Image 1: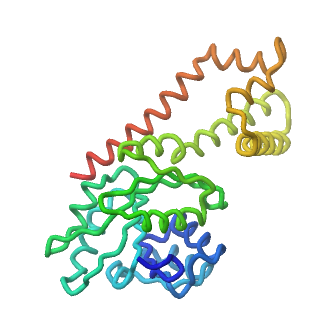
Image 2 (image 1 turned 45 degrees about the vertical axis):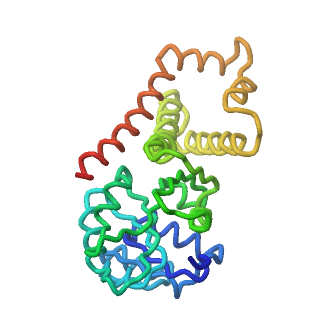
Length: 286
């Protein structure tokens, strides 16, 4: 496997996440435009990728993947099976080396991917499953990864470089089912965060603060708190304790959270997202 700078990288899917990965690779100089091709059926997405990133695009999955060293599968779970089978059919026996597949498709298991990617002569590409999240669009992503059978240390390093183009944190898990937990934690997590900020702003607005001011204060508060989480060595629990004065305003708010079952609400949310990822694998992987 060549270094990523020398790899021909194919993206099957040119939506937001695929574009974020490409943008990160180009910005960091990890890959050249000439070595990237994107297969995208939607005219709007294809035009956007061409205009903003300057890479070659096509409507043909088979054309994009024809000589790829690395194939990033960035499609919706509902269409993954058909796309994988189409690609497998396009890889004839004359192609000696199949690409390393990096799948960012939620829920779809290694078993399904290996079966769908199986060629007519019984071969299947090596696969790494990855779960990124939408802060990748700002270069602040967090990703979980799992290496399938046969993926070498060198190939894992290549995936690290790929993910490092948009993720500040990449965590490799040692069991595939933990990718679903990553989905419930960091994959879906930004939406939990946005929902909390949304309700904070609504509450402050109801108490009389102008919405524009409430939004600015809430955004900066959450940005600052997030920066403290990343930059300081103390645990989230300790940081919470540090800003909670006995019998003060923060303690009153946190007491209200607990009385409303906040720990259980968060627990149920993470478990619901994890369960849905597992369900997608079972339903769509048949």
